[in-house]
Length: 186
Ligand code: ADP
Image (cartoon, rainbow, N blue to C red; front, side):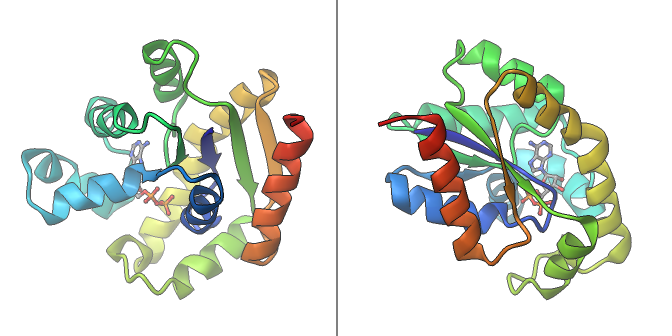
């Protein structure tokens, strides 16, 4: 199973990705987490992306593609990919590189900005980019400007499953699994 999760910050991508990874027995790959790990271990790439993460801006495509490509190459049985692609250009590059074998389905976790904001404020992980109102607002704005077109792209291709992500986490997982089962008989 190769699933891509799309949704604004605070939609619950990480939580749902963990649950789906457990369900399907495939790894959860989070582009944000991969980048944060580079930052924490002080790699060259980490030093290059740290400012983008702090400001809530998208990191440059080539750097993100490098870490995501490496992680996908090691996930032969499939993956739950969270946080990538975030732009049309990333989606097109990923499709081109993986010869159409990039995603079986794309799940859109749909949630209003107000709910997403509240969740980020309550997040326990203590991420520095969740602490600043301006950074949160920039991430939400960037989602609507850059990632909404990715949602439309997959909707147009009949690959999109949209789920109401304002529900409690278990209900969201159940809704995703039901929608996927409906799409993929057997
Ligand atoms: P969230 O969706 O809550 O903002 P993520 O962990 O997915 O959290 O992303 C955190 C940050 O990592 C983003 O604000 C951005 O700076 C960077 N990032 C993650 N994925 C990508 C990507 N696909 N393209 C560009 N930047 C990314």
